[in-house]
Length: 356
Image (tube, rainbow, N blue to C red; front, side, top):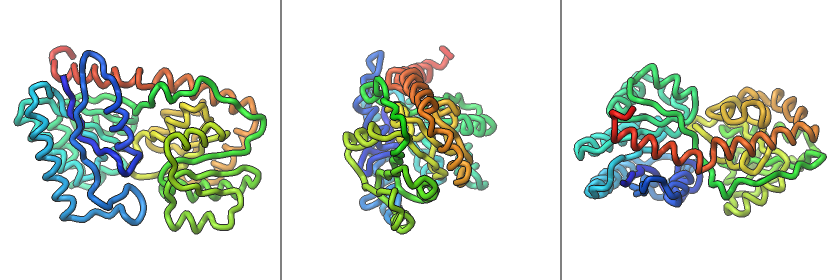
């Protein structure tokens, strides 16, 4: 049996595209295999920064390419399920509603996978109307965090499953050396304000003896804020092996995001997989992941709370306990071995609806 993923591949890297690559490289149980209809962003567009603005004509062209590619993939008799991965933005949902119609016309099952925190983007009447229509058109819905589950249950009777993102088991560290003194903090992702990077810079000013490293493409505003802050380093984007080395050499991961499209942070999961204690905001799946046991959870845009939380992380024994929790939870809940089976089980429940 085959599942057709409606999802982007890199470039740009990160986000849903990073998950897509992991799915393509994964061995699914019960003989399932993955085909991809590439929903890559239009030429020249990026996830963050000045190039994220959409071109109407490029988006129309992209939509027709996606719909045509999906039709071709559905000619394969082994294709049983279409698994659509999108943020809950209105235009994305309209595009995927057409995909759902194409899928249903070919008598296949359609699973909708919202890669975001749904209530953060489904707010207006039009957005809510489109959201309800595509949810009701789908055979099953995957969500990344509890806020999204609670919101979606009120608007549709379509079966819902809470399934996290996953990390490769080979990428999970066996242990983490916890240094006596906290001297290195790290952030990985889009280096922009809504990812909390401005707040992290303010945090850095309160701890001049701790070096704060930002891995990722920085926006102009963050570059300006970081200028003259001696313990802040913007190293730009790095290859995966380089990111892993930086995480391994760091003492704490700082993730103060309030990014609208956040659902379940791959960067945070990867930091947990390296055994890093984490300081995060109460946003998207962050609190679900950390549980105030693998680090500390603070309100968004509250630098004072972040300063106090980091102070609590200074003792060696606190960070050692947080590190051990993150490593254990990653293996148990967020490893590919734990999550991939959930996808396949859901596919099989969907094509055999009487099973439950």
